Length: 305
Image (cartoon, rainbow, N blue to C red):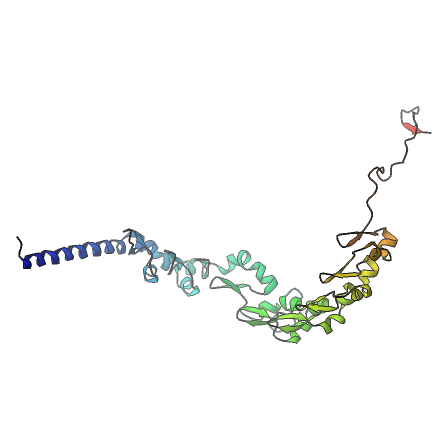
């Protein structure tokens, strides 16, 4: 039998062998082509090589060439503009901004990524994968002059930059905007323009559409009296308040309206005054009610008598 000392020596040797094999497997991933190319430098429980941490990505070509220097869900991805800006792809191709895990070019990607938010909200610049407004220019369309008519400032009162967004910072921002003129949303609150009841009563929305009250910061039709005083009642029969708007709900709404008197739109359908449908057996418009007798003339053409 082995002595106790000899068994201890054998156990220590086995531990050395196991440690060596584990180290060898780990070193195999670190020395692999996958590690150099894609950052797959860590040996998993299934003995395959995968990405486990940022340190796996940083030395790889995925990072140095394409800015994919951060580990996420087992792969190397681009999450930071700084990683993209240090990459070969930025220097050679202008792919200097992180977006959805890859580095992209601001110039090439602006139309597809930020164009919609740029026109409506001034968020025109891609930063860390998000479209943001970085200066007043994107909110107003002008560095120092009056805002362009199509800008978020002129349309919605969003004239100042805060945390990457165009916002309405003061009542003055709102009061110069189209949304104040057209919808009485003239008060700044929480970065947007809202309507107060006093503004609604004096607005064109009240005179035209009966929206003389305010709900959740927007002008709304709250009473039948407001609707009946509006031009939409006189012109189109929209005389009853429902769901925040004026609409036609009965033939009595339509009857006094211009739409009924001049265009025969005296019947209610889906909140609007419309013309009554013709009877099912009525002949098509322009066709006589009873057929005439037809005879052939000398030229063969039909004529009635």
